[in-house]
Image (cartoon, rainbow, N blue to C red):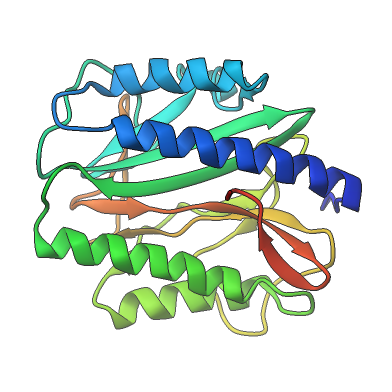
Length: 244
């Protein structure tokens, strides 16, 4: 069942989204060569609690941390540890918070120091794919329009969407129906309605899109990137809630 949100609920999620964006920006700025992903976890938790919010991921299905820190070939669900970041790495940070009973969720991938041109292009393409998916999230369109916009753009730039991973609805639970696939056919799938709130999150890799589940995260065969926003359908159009 799809949980449509009213204006009051979306406003609470908007408040939470602004807090989440601010927290993510601070953590991102601290992610420099030599720092451990565990230190970023400590920082994120402190910031979340200072905002009066709760971490959405901590304890969720047994996940042991407040944030996901996924480095290079780890595309999602990377567990913070004593691993030190080094120049040339790419780091994906995925955060979720609960604010006044409602969750918001976002992710960003960025370089640690200087990275090669292929990784730069990977990050640029993935972020642009998110924007293209969001642009199709309009009342009356269908979920297949979002997935098609993402996948067709990614493939046109010589990359591939990671298989088996997707976005999701969000609200009183961090993961709700429906699934928001990063593939699809135009005009197919569930119709988008006023009050939908969901997370669009393309995950993209260089080639060979298969995944491997490990104790330290979900890995691909090559470096991968992940960008995500929580989006609400307001007055028929997409509004990004996880921003300033």
